[in-house]
Image 1 (cartoon, helix red, strand yellow):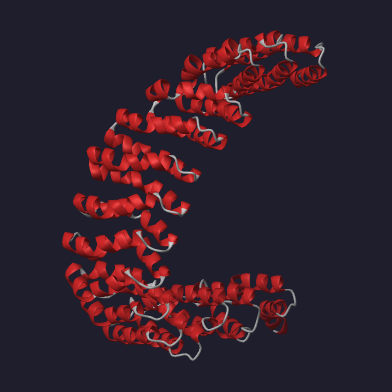
Image 2 (image 1 turned 180 degrees about the vertical axis):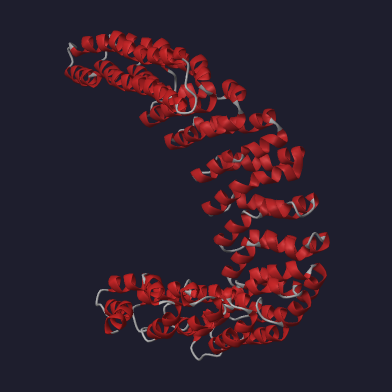
Length: 619
């Protein structure tokens, strides 16, 4: 009998030893194994021995208590099911009052899990007293924690108890501690969906009005989401009667943090409060957005700029033109680059609202000015959204208005400005299409290969590679590669060098056939160039090209292998693949290697070095 008793006590003994260990990580590991110990003990002994033991072990490091609070939330199956769920409440009630927020958050999360598994009778008998204890506790930590329990508990109790819970929640709303009022405002939003409109007007609206006039801006700003939730539930008539005056005060709140929150939720507020009522929008919301667009704080102007298209869809076009657009024009010249960047991401959204003629009259001048902005993100954001404008006014008008600005920037005397435009060209090309690009921008891209600044020439080669990704290999073969080859005969050796680099860069995105028929003959002609720098550039290019040829051939082989795993390829396809790999090796051996051998005997030491290095790469 004694051996059996010893075996039964063993799990608890092990847990006790590990929980007393000096190493925190071992104590945490012990807590994480609580479910295993509970299984060994069985439900009855877990309830009668393990849980009481854990209640006595609450004086530990915060890391240990956090893990324990999380574990207890999953412990209902180990204590015999939901009928015994109340056994887990005492330790979690203690955790909900500790100073460390992480422990409290895990305790609240676990309590919400447990109450969802409890019956209505259990909630009335065991959980409501817990809620009352935490709500009326002396220390603010318990009150902060309990605010996160009300929404879950409210769904589980009867009408009379619901009234009691609302009264208890009111104590938290009117609490002296700002931390408690903040928590109450945060969790009030989650409680509203479970309350009927009449009760919301009688009980919840007074809470909202009180919190919205709090002397702490950190409390007032949280009431914005509460106001939206209440407005959605009550409907426009009740909202105008009870909340509209308070909302007007929030629009002009003395704290920029509150105005920031109003601006961030402006479209949601307009939809919830006005509910399509044009008079309310015109009378209250249009002046509010104009005031926020002119706010003294850049952070507020930044966030309201992002609300412009969404809100403008709710009001008449006349209101947009007469009231809102003048303030938007001011933002184009805003001293804050972040405000201008935010506006650039959204201003294109006005084009579908204004229509073709008004977009041309009002928006295009703003686009042109922002395209010339000194801050790169502003220019990029405008270019990213040009497709919206294109859909409204058409490519012809867009090109007529914007192309001169783009061309002017592309030839700016500051090379960094030119570099910024080059980086945007592939994005612009994808927005405007191949035909427009070939007629309006292609020559500009080629001209960059001859720029007197190396960084521009280098970026121009990368630009051609990216354009090939946009328009395809056939377009590059017909349009770009002939221009690159032509530049290779320029008397200026720097331009010939750039053409060599461009050909090598393009090789990464074209086919083996294009490399064989177009790029390699061009490079072969430069082998005898009188400038040593050109010759060793060719030697380096050969090394890159032979790697690319083999990689492209292997990729073809791997793709075919992947197909064979599902549908076996015919023998003819297999032979074609083998021929393709053999062709890549043939190009290397018959074209690249002989030229490298020639360069290996060059009179210049650098040319010989790179030629030898490339030959070694052939294996």
